Image (cartoon, rainbow, N blue to C red):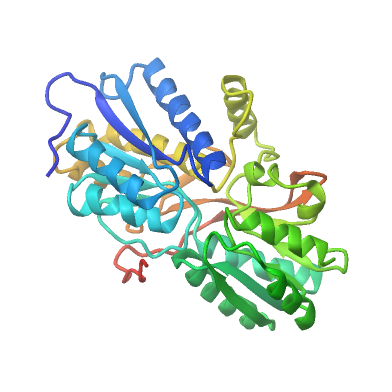
Length: 382
């Protein structure tokens, strides 16, 4: 058990692991900014329980071994009260071992992911398949008439589990999966896959290829004329930071489904985006899904729980109990609440489409439950 930082009048210590270098740095840098912004806001209002909140920010470097080492440092050397961070699911598992399994420390994972994480000390504040795939794909099939889907994918846990979910929803709605392939993350030659997509006549490419291989795939798919022939490109994890990395013509028409987009029209979301842009006017943007919205939500929900508990006890019990039902009246994209007994968040979801280099919301799906019971048997983590 890690030594608690709650004794005496010392600071409350928050550890955040953000991929500030490596292939996911465009997202990780934004996550680091969000952590600084939220902790700064909390301290400006007196901290937590009358104590200053100290942010200890570590670079996960888009490398699981590095993330694990940084997580161990946060628990063993810095004695943090809570750890946030991780984007890839494999990074979550790398962080989980030293923080939760060995360190007995509360861990909040802020990224959209495949679901099924189940541990008393882990809370997840990003969307899961029941909030993305379940409402989105029936809408897409109804609105566009799409029936056939091709699934080019990264070869790790998130795409495998998400694709199983996609297959179930597509077939339940009268559609067909006409192709499913998996590639190493640094794979760059997708010519044969693009040829197969054309040969099958797939209506939809549901993509889970991720950086660094994503750029070559999108370029080769665009050059093949897929979208100009009327094909629909879908990437549920795509946010404004990723959109900005590609020529507008390569991502024109791309559909996504996230908990927040910058065009969300509610007053709080607009105010939050203005605050972020004023603090960080250049570079990584505040976005949904890629842990910005999830990290903001997680930090705020945790602060609510600490305030309700009135303590940061060594065993985390009171904070965990309060976090299990914590709510936010306002947040990016709208209100949010932990679903008791699930350690996942009910949140608003949106369907958006890339038009002229920006995302425009085309459907507000409203608040959707995660459907992630805590006692569910976890899936494989390889």
